[in-house]
Image 1 (cartoon, chains in turn orange, yellow):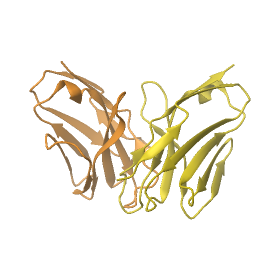
Image 2 (tube, chains in turn purple, cyan):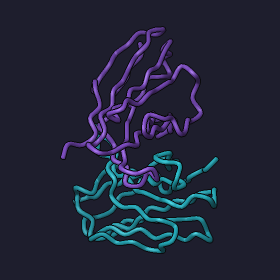
Image 3 (cartoon, helix red, strand yellow):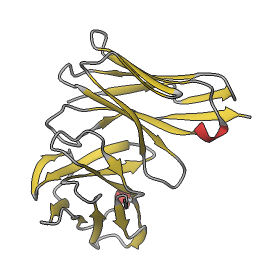
Image 4 (cartoon, chains in turn purple, red):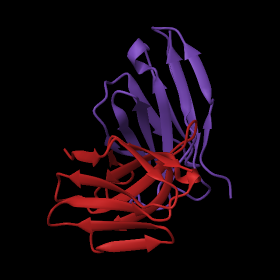
Length: 113
Length: 113
């Protein structure tokens, strides 16, 4: 059974640009969440989707957005990139609405220059 | 919101010894507590989890204990091996909020052969 797949693995962008990251959950998983990981702030929750609906959103500016498609695949978008957006972006999926047994992908390493 | 504190930040043990990592949480509504192991260049890997209606859970060399009254939970690794070396994160969430986890700041465990 394939795990959570995130693409691309690495990305370099310039300040002011926008970026879209993709996450394919484990087959059958309907809940997808996104996290930002940085050395200074650790793992911080961005948002969570279940059956194409955003159920929860973390404390991030509106430049961070996401969506989930009918096949449970999810994308997150960051507009007007800032240097501080450089981070590892992680996606996690779980089978049920409760969110237990969440499995993470390997992440997308975003560097903003 | 929930605040999860994790100690120690670094831990070195001799191979074969036990390792204990402790976490506290602030929100009494939290009722699901997973532990993740993150190796360099990889996403967090779920190693064990516990729900608030259970006081202890074991899986081979790994165990987690939960004290709801004191709002703390701990990870115990026995007979440590070099491959246990990694960063370990505790997390807390409320079932029904999906994968909205509040993570601790991580413990870097080094097992010395």
